[in-house]
Amino acid sequence: VFKKGRIGLVSRSGTLTYEIARELGKKNYGVSTVLGLGGDPVTGLNFIDAYNYFMNDPDTDAVVIIGEIGGDAEERFAKHYASLRNKKPVVAYIAGKTAPPGKRMGHAGAIISMGMGDYASKRKALEEAGIPVADKPSEIPLLLDKVL
Image (cartoon, rainbow, N blue to C red; front, side, top):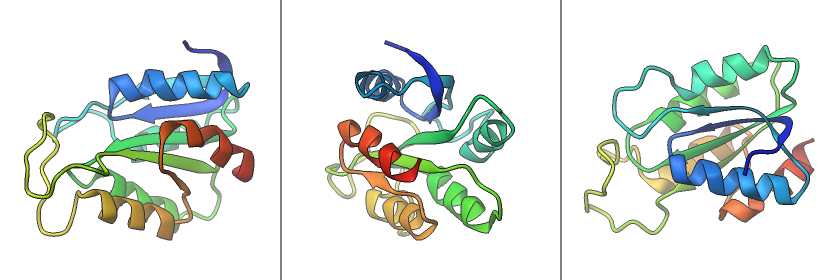
């Protein structure tokens, strides 16, 4: 499912990693490196660390981040990205758009509180930082076409 290419892929969701890698390959994009963060509240790596890796990788031209509801990792990344002068293009997909409010979802990290961690707050933060957000995984290559 993974095709060699120049797109960095960092994800909180294992299954969506495969799905988006497949979508990239169908449109002749491939991946330089794939990093999995996991969906737990405490991780050893985060979106900022992953982006910094890709920023220094000469084999990566753009980055796809795959987030999901719960926690504030995407919001923290958006703030970091907005503060940078030199950047590589980033596009995103956030899982959980249709999750019922107030219902705890399967992942340990899918905890939403005080207006943070829900789909709307993540999408807003990313878009305000200049990061386009796909409505579905198949739109990721189309967004890459626009930013590259």
